[in-house]
Amino acid sequence: MSDREGHSGAGPSDEDLSLPKATVAKMISELLPAEVTCAKETRDLVIECCVEFIHLISSESNEICEQESKKTIAPEHIIGALKRLGFDSFTTEVEDVLKDHKQQQKDREKKADKIKDSGLTPEELMAKQEELFAASRAKFAQPQGQQQQPST
Amino acid sequence: MKTKNKQTKFPVARIKKIMQKDEEVGKVAQATPVVISKALELFLAMIVEEATKVTVERGAKKVEAYHLKHAIETTEMLDFLKEIVESVPDP
Image (cartoon, rainbow over all chains, first blue to last red; front, side, top):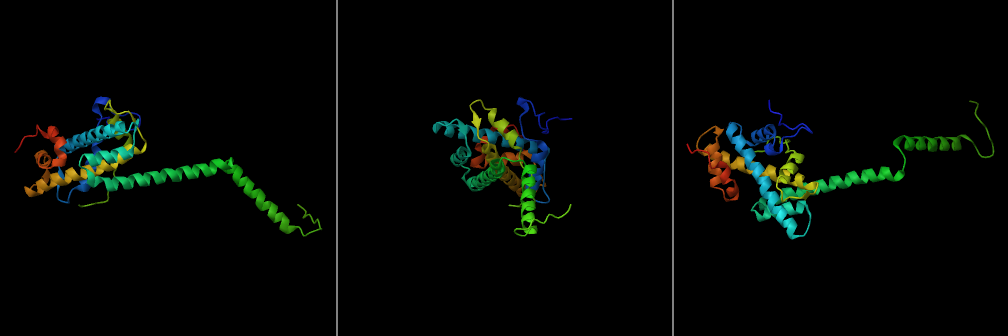
């Protein structure tokens, strides 16, 4: 009945902005020991707590961002906020995720550049390759001085 | 901490929307919600762990709201959540 579970485009209205129940429920059950379950009421409260956490971190990192006279909240500001708010123990894993993300971005850009620089489409590139093969085949098939054209 | 096969992640776009609900928050770098998603995972694990401790301590099989409330009230890092669980009745 609820249209709130994220389909791209049809998101929740501003007032309902929260995290998807199904996702959080799944994550909670992945964390609980085998014999323990979570009451629905508890799950809903946990979701509220998560949203509150986002607000807390956003607010703190926004302050840090302004103190540095920057206009865009960067991951480094988030890490600073975590430390300030006593979530120091999170920073190692968060920094790892940041490193991975930056590396993925670099790899994506490298791939895109290589293909862009040649200025040719994949079809054109393949055609070029065929031409080169044909040319070297021809060179080996014809001995020097003699123009022996094979009949086609 | 038990780690079962954890592949579920928070939706990054939704996190960004929640951030920008705060009028003070302006532009957000692309990597920022990704990083918050990780912090949120760790946070979730933490509150679930604290609440579950209370559940197990009391010999219950279900994590009830007042287990969560008790965990929040006794963990300094979770002070900012006190208002959320204020209205939860004690058993």
